Length: 169
Image (tube, rainbow, N blue to C red; front, side, top):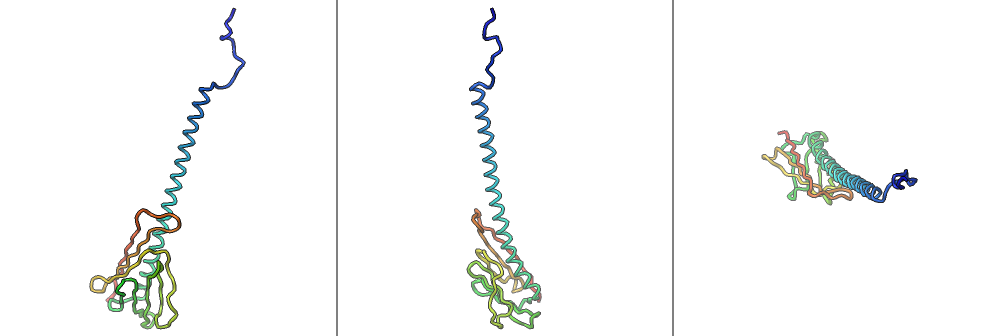
């Protein structure tokens, strides 16, 4: 007589131990995939905020550099307010009109001709700080801009950029 345990079984499928092990492995794999996805989203948001903040600051610096260079501002034609948030310069291309940059409440403003009375127009928003200073006997204008964050993501430390514009004598 043949023992019953050696006969082919009609039951097919996995044992309870095999199902538990497969479930544990699947849970681990899906957990790691979810963790990697969440961390990559965080990094992406951080890099996007950093990139946008740098773009805003570079835009502010470019505005100042462009106006000073295109206006051919000379070394003796620039005055900076005591607090460093306003820069006035004589623009020879506009018949000696006085143009001005002003930083207030996170916005860089520009006025092409102060005497015209048209007022300042906003050029760059979302700056934390922007300051002007004259160096090397009034032949170099250093512009420093600073920002911490935009949108919903705050950077760990603020980004600060500087630019120097060398003036003609």
